[in-house]
Length: 485
Ligand code: NAP
Ligand code: MG
Image (cartoon, rainbow, N blue to C red; front, side, top):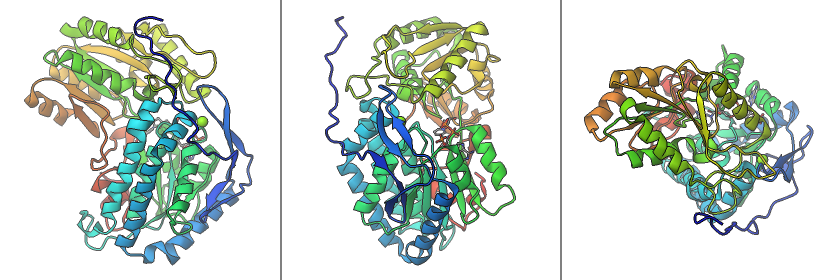
């Protein structure tokens, strides 16, 4: 053992009480699905965790009917303060079951327990507490007097923050008075199914929340269903584009939270060690499976070598391995398919002439893994500078002047996030003003708060989630519901 090696400190899985097979959650009950059931596996061991039902078009139809009935008969007739009580109750149960949810999420997704325990699940509860507070105050949200719910919302989420993305979708929708049908990602359905149990535990009226598991086809039939009033989608830009095409010309409201290629900009007056920590949390948090990741590092030319060598030294201390171990920094990549995509894009970096450096870590025999990797000598035309890798891979480029930093940062089809590292507040504000990104962090990165709106420009999508802005896409009396920003 080297001096930095730690003894194993695995989190116990005894807190889990999982079923072997999960059905669909429709009308307040678990029911059989009519598609082909599929397994959800742990990406760190490739072991099957549970079998999950696949919802067919007919199952999706039942779920939408249950949501419609609940909307008409119960939820739309309830006062905001009554709805708020259910949301507060759900938030409290989420806190009570936090440990169990963190373990389940780590098992199903592959992300380190340190992150699910300290980031994902606390934020999930915070989101429900925050929107619970809005349920009886909607007329003060800024969406006009007496704002009305839309009806039934169809919600589709990706695998990178499974329960957190569910919270971002369900909490504002319910607070605003809608009922929902949600489809989690095929590879990470587990915590959505535990959330269904929590809805039962909270005595949420049947049909207010429905969960349909399945893959892309299930999502597509949900989006195409004629009786939904709103689609909220988080995922890739290509699928977002398909959804926009399906809904073009219909009255269904849409919000799209899509991909990103965020720039993290370090000026030569920045506190370098602090910036290095921000770079690490910007791109190596959650194995880089973060839509708003700081995947492009723009460093002022005169400090480039210093920043890169300090970064490599820091990355050499990260521990990759069992995500359930409390000392693990880098967990497993979520799926074989995602690992193949990361590998292909990283190889294109080699082929196009960039310089690859990877932290020397032992890769476990089973599961899907990619070491923290940094590319230098990257040109703005390289694929690794333009395409979203969605993995622990950083592309480093340089700039000489603030104008060049802004031009390079904005040279992307995306516009979700950006970071600025400088000691000068005036520079922070001047640069932030010129960056075309929905979220801009200064001297920090990847910080989230339910009160703060989040969303993109350009191919990163439209609409905002979080804050009072996150209510508007679920309310009738607002231009925001038309997809504007
Ligand atoms: P994805 O392939 O677009 O999948 C997202 C969700 O859509 C999944 O539930 C997926 O089902 C479903 N889906 C697939 N095809 C569909 C179709 N034709 N119609 C309806 N639904 C369909 O994205 P991903 O690869 O899982 O997730 C990574 C992407 O999400 C990245 O680009 C990332 O940047 C983005 N993301 C954005 C944000 C944000 O807030 N802007 C947050 C997180 C992630 P299955 O996966 O089950 O097949
Ligand atoms: Mg899984």
